[in-house]
Image 1: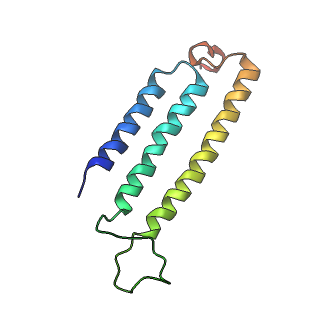
Image 2: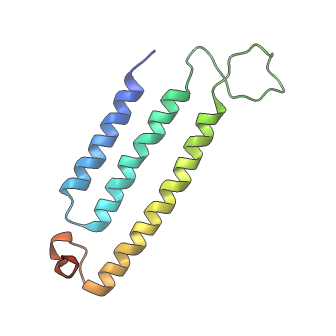
Length: 115
């Protein structure tokens, strides 16, 4: 069992979170959030991968005892990609509305949103 995919997922998450924390532009922050969310793709694929020669679960040409990868994890990754794209589009539309109303995308300059 290799720990490299888990380390890669953690590194991608940390890179996205660092960009999110240090960002002074909301568009850039949304991009960094998408990067952080993409670490879940790597994590889910690492969980579903079985390294001993497993193939895709297409059963028409495989013997019944052949090792196959987990198709549920692959479906979860596809769902994660769709949800991530939807959330990114929603957040970018909110940033556009903030730009139209307040004239800036810098979180420090959005004084009208402070309580």
